Image 1 (cartoon, helix red, strand yellow):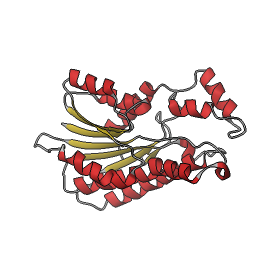
Image 2 (cartoon, rainbow, N blue to C red):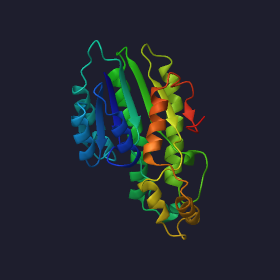
Image 3 (cartoon, rainbow, N blue to C red):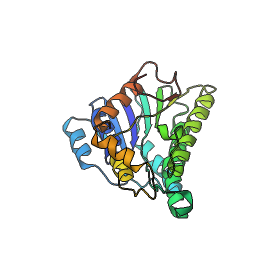
Image 4 (cartoon, rainbow, N blue to C red):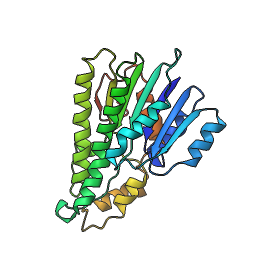
Length: 251
């Protein structure tokens, strides 16, 4: 049995990840602001155990209690071989020059994109530190952490922070008795709501908006299904953890 925690499963990459990981030998633990009944029904149809938590991850002060509830549902048996965590939930907005962004928008972005995965990871590691099983953390990062554009300072800063956090945890875990492997991945440009959001921003707020519109019109965006498939290949690979930050899923 593999216990697999996934955040942001209501749509996009997270929904596709959950959909493709439905298996009778998996225990899916899904977290999103709104529940995804399609995933719940499909898991039940395929005899896959699922626990779904409706939770707004910007409420970072309540994540500790959330994980106390989650780990009550994780019972390790002698044939259990893994506990995996996929930090996927993210938001792109606000897309705007920083001086035109309200303080509460900055806080919300950093809470979801950086602080939430940090607190989730801390809880996961604390509660699994004495478990001698295969432990893997997959952080969904972004090329925006490295290749900067105007009007994306919140998102890019959060993703750069997530990369640094991933590298730091990798160093720490090499020093413990039962280490977890941790990897951050740049999944590429995907046809999700995040891309729809950025294409709807005015040229005044985001000078590169026409480039993103062109990429969509030319069919150059990956599907969430393809992206999830490649991410799962990475997660389940024997080489998982050898590269801590993966900048291309095709490498």
